[in-house]
Length: 202
Image (spheres, rainbow, N blue to C red):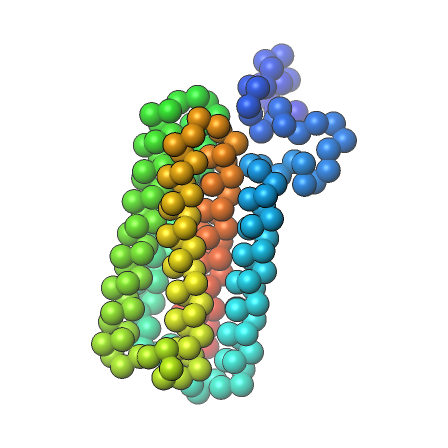
């Protein structure tokens, strides 16, 4: 029970509290639309398989992976981590603004989230350019094959997430905005797991 409910103030008709009925299953209580969660879980499974493969390959070829990591720039990856974490917070603010019925605030927070997502893409492409300039190649070693596959797959999801955020913000349905925010948090979470595995672990 929320403070508002305890005080006798009814939940908003389109608020998360109003969608959780007594006796509802865990799936019914998930924020946003169920089909978005089907997509999120499938994408998490795909990233999980890639990360497990990355770790197995590291165990089999530790010298190759150590040499490959030596060509990466953890500072750029840390900057991208800051971009995505901040962007996730802005996306959450956009979802809250949508439920509050504030269209201007929803767009303001959504655009802030998307701009930081765009900054992530720009930094990552700059990082790729430097790595390729230093002789890195997707066919050069097992490390760089998996590195470009894993980070490139994630980069595509960042671009897709930006498109989803803009698309759902265009609609007045707060649940759609919340669904887009859930997808964006998935992209954020995957990067938070990838960052130490790819850049920091030895």
